[in-house]
Amino acid sequence: MKSLLLYLVIFVIAVGCRDHKETYDIDRSFWPPVEEEADSLVAILNSKAVHAIYEPGDTVLANRIDSIGRVKQLPQLRARALFWNIMTRSRYGLDSALVADLERAISLCDSVAYPYDHARMIIERPSVPVLTPERAMSYQKAVELFKECGDSAYYASTKALMVHYVDRYSHEKALEMGWSVSRTLHNINANVFALSVDYNIAVMLYDTFQYERAFAMLDSLRQNPELHKYNRLVLMVDIMQYEKDNDAGYLYDALQRCDSLRRPAAMQGCVVSTLAAHYIDKGMPDSVLYFKNRLNEENINKPLTKHIVYANLIKVYESEGKPDSAALFRPYIEKCEKERSDFKLGSQIESDIVSSTLSDMEQNLARLESEKNKTVSVVLSVSAILLCISGLTIWILVKRKRRQRSRLVAEQRRAAISEVRAAEKERALAEIVESVRSESDEFKPLIARIKANLTPDSDWQKVKLLFDEINPEFVDRLRRSYPVLTPSEVRLACLVYLGLDTKHIARLLSIAPDSVKKTRQRLRAKLAISPDTDLHDFLSGIMR
Image 1 (tube, rainbow, N blue to C red):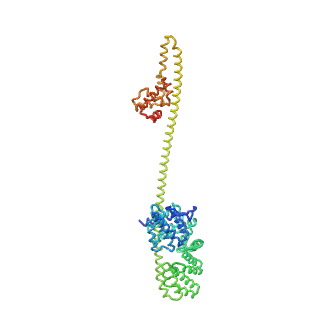
Image 2 (image 1 turned 180 degrees about the vertical axis):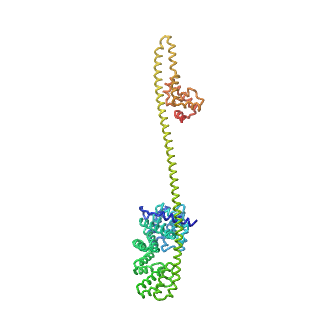
Image 3 (image 1 turned 60 degrees about the horizontal axis):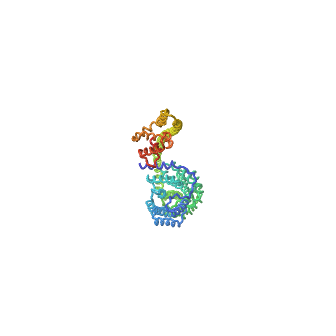
């Protein structure tokens, strides 16, 4: 299960590698803010790191960050200070003490609040012979985090950490990933990171006998302005350049660089023995003897170059006619060749298994993507249907509201017309009554009849019929909610609902305005309306 998890992480990292061509500031600090002064010091140290500029005074900056963290009680600053102290002292690699300090910095770091800090710290852990699923997952999380925050340099460099691990499972994917990472780093001018990636690509090509492509990488390496800062890398490039041009001058340059290394013997045996073998082919036995005598116990048995030195010594002793001496070194070479053959066979078998696993994963991913697309289509369809239903509902509500508004306007217009007609009728009949009031008694029955027509009941019946036609539910709702209302109070409520004021109601009903006011007061009391509530608004609320 862990192996499958590891393969999946490697597959995701490998296929997810894409070129970043956006504008990128290599000196930009992506460390989240904690404290203003400390943040500025971290930005300075970060810029030095991406340019591989290490100075003794950098520890002073790291110590200042630690002081700020102690004074202001900010544990995250103390974790950063410890990390930068390690970085300023790790130019030649991490020894056991620095590794212990790095783990302490990681434990101090708040990975939840400051995930970027945690990612920057874990990618500085020293490499391990076999990549564990836990380490692979931590690299994958770091890659996703750097991509999310836009830190292209560490996004690509973290992928570069995976290249030699991926090479164990799939050489083609490792090379593909390496080329993509290299392009990304060159696009953003991250020369320090690109240097290491390009060198690893050249070594992978060289180890797989793709000499032309490997030698082509040498030109890219020599054009990198950061190369001169790393004597070990320059030395290795010189050795590869010798393999290309067969020019001993590169080996002499490499031999001089050995003296500048912290541990010169680590590479000295390789260079010296290669020079001895070179002069065998040139037929210069004195030079062969000179360089053979420079070999000693210290520089012969370095694990990194032991097989190269032994192979050259076999060649030297055979040229001197000393097969017994050559035989002393042959078992180790045969052992190395067998291990290499076994490793290739094992890697091929493992690669086949991984290729099959990756193929299955690709099919599963394709299937999941297809299911995802179907799900998205269904969700979009349902959303579209719901949107249409919502739009239709809103349209119906708007239309209904407009229709109600139109009805209200029509009600007001009809009520106004009725009011005018009633007023005209009232004035006409009043004039008739005045004109015949002084006449004989024979007109009294007629006058009484006319006065009967001046009562508001008949006009109110017409208005009520019209009102009930337009608002058939109003009176019923009002009576059901307030059964104690009298007919005159219901009549007043209807006229107020139409928007008529006291004066117009008095004229329509042919009563005094004071009578209307008193009726309004009784109506408000029965409706239990507070003084600051408008009667018309309250009645309108009955129909909502």
